[in-house]
Amino acid sequence: MLIHWIWLASLTGSSDRTKAALLSRLGDAEDVFHTDRAALERIEGLDRQTLEALDNKDLDQAHKILVQCENKAIKICTLADKDYPAKLKSIPDPPPVLYYKGHLPDLSQRPAIGVVGTRKATAYGLGVASRLGGQIARCGGVVVSGMARGIDAMAMTGALQAEGCVIGVLGCGADVVYPASNRELFREMERWGCLISEFAPGTPPSKWNFPRRNRIISGLSDGVLVVEAPSKSGALITARLAADQGRDVFAVPGNIGVAECAGSNELLRDGAIMVSTGWDILSEYQAVYPETVVRYKGPEPPVYHEPQTPKVAGSDKICQPEPASSGSKEKKVIDNRDDGPYIDGEMINISLTPEERSIVERLKDGPCLADDLIVATGLPAGTFLSVVTMLQVKGMVRRLPGNMLSL
Image 1 (tube, helix red, strand yellow):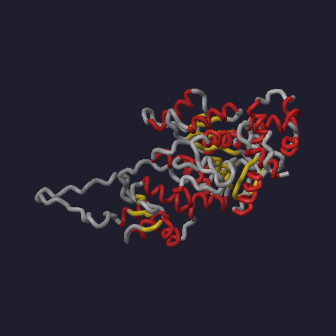
Image 2: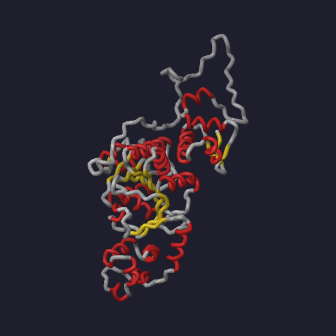
C-alpha cells in the first residue's frame, strides 16, 4: 500500500541504500513493514540503528504526509510504480518515493542531461547555460537541473523557451519555493515541466539536503554537463556522482584564471568531454535514441557576453565619440538627469530584441513590479525571467527590493 511506501521513505536512521537492499530482499514496502524484528535480524548487513528504525510501526506521520499531498496536488511515485524512472532506479541508493508536481516524463524514450553550475555565474556562463539548455531541448533531450540561482535557473529557462522537456530536482518539499527569487520559474516548471523531490511536503531547504538531491540529478540523467563551477562547488559533487553512477560527464571550457571556471576546467583536465553546443552532447546518444534525438538546424539565440561598445547599424566600425571641431573647445554634454537613467532610443532599437524592448519601454516611466510587467508585456513568465536576466547582463535593467525592476 502507498502508506507503507511513505512510511519507509520517512524512516530516519536507515539509508536509502539499505532501504533499496531491503526492498530487493523482501519485495515491497508493505512486506518490509510487516517483517518482524527476529526475521530482520537474520538479514545480513542490518545494523542496530536500522533495526531500531524499522521497529517504528507508527503510520500517523505517513497518513499526514498523504493528506498533505492530496491537499496540495502533489503526486507520488514509488519504486514499485511503472512510471518510476528506470535510470534512477538503477543507482545504488534510489529514493523509495518521489513527490512531484507537473508531468513526469518518460525518460526511457529520450536522453536526459543534467545541467549544473555555480550560483554566482559570470555573464558569459549565464548566457551559455541558457543557450545550451535550449539546444539540448531542441535536439530532443530532457534538461534536468537543481533549480538554484545562476546556471541551474538559466538552463531551465532556456529549455522552457525552446518548449522542451524539463525536470527540476529540489532540496526541499515539492511545495516549497526555494530560492524565493525563482517563484515565477517554479510556476512555469509546474505548468510545463516537472518538479521532483524525495522530501515530504513542507520540508524546508537544508544544506544537508542538497548533496542528497545531487545524486537524483545525476541518477535521472544519461550525462551531466557542468557549465561553470569553482573548485569547491556542489556542481562538482554532482559530476563525481555521475561518474560513480556510470554517467557521462561534460564540461564547458572557461577562462583561465577566473575563479568561477576553475572547477569545470579541472574536470576537463581530468577527462570530462569538452562541449560548446547542445549537439556536442546529444550526438553521443543518437544511436541509443534514434527516433527522438535529431540535430536542430534552425537559428540559435546568441551567447551573451559582457556588454560591449555597440556598432552603428550598417557599419563595421565601432562607435567612437565624435571629435570636436578644431575651432571649438566646447565639450559635448550628455543629458543625464539625476531623476532617471539616460537611454538612447536608437541604441535600444539596434541592440535589443522585441521582447527586451517591450520591457525597457515600460520601465522608462520608472520602477515597476515584475508581476505588473508580465501583465503589461504579455510575455510568459519563463520568457519574461529569461529576458530580464539578459537585460541585466547587458547592463540595461537592475533588480530592486520588493521584486521591483528599474532601468
